[in-house]
Amino acid sequence: MEIKSIDAEKNGILTTANLMCVAARTAPKARGIDNIVTIILTDKAISELSAKMVEIANTGYRTNTFLRDAEGVKKATALVLIGTKISTIGLDCGFCGFENCKKLEESKGICAYNSGDLGIAIGSAVSVAADNRIDNRIMYTAGYAAVKNNLFGDTVKIAFGIPLATSGKNIFFERK
Image (cartoon, rainbow, N blue to C red; front, side, top):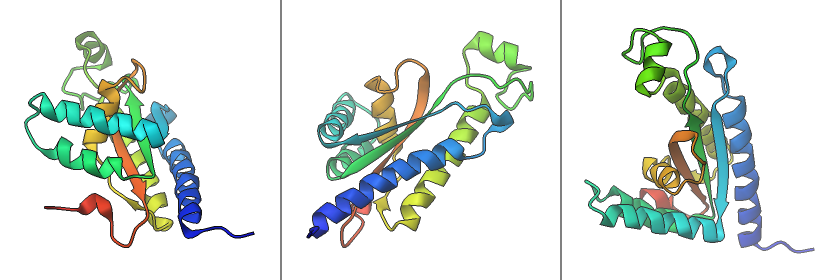
């Protein structure tokens, strides 16, 4: 049997993407409440997300970041999306700026722990990519486009995307 480099690399990327989702799932979370949702995109789904990023850029988004990142996403072999459901966790801590969780829920705000747990999950996921020497970059633009494209359904309001590739140089840090 012979496995060409391109096939080995694609298989490695997909294996790593799966392990990244595992790392996001098992990352520590406030009060043990798991609001993390992961999705892996490949092929046509990546192209569709990249097109959504271009669409967002062309509707007057305030920076050119979406256009730049859409080019990188388009070249990715896989893209891991990590988002968080929005729900209070019942600590009544006030970190969200409201007096208690009930007031936050009434205002339809976002619990500070949702964002914190998402950050920890993303850190765990990208450490897996780094440990496996897979080029990656955390992109709010890809997550924003995924939320706007309703890839997560109605419960996820905050997400980030992590495109994955193998090359002689990390393609996600190209600057012109």
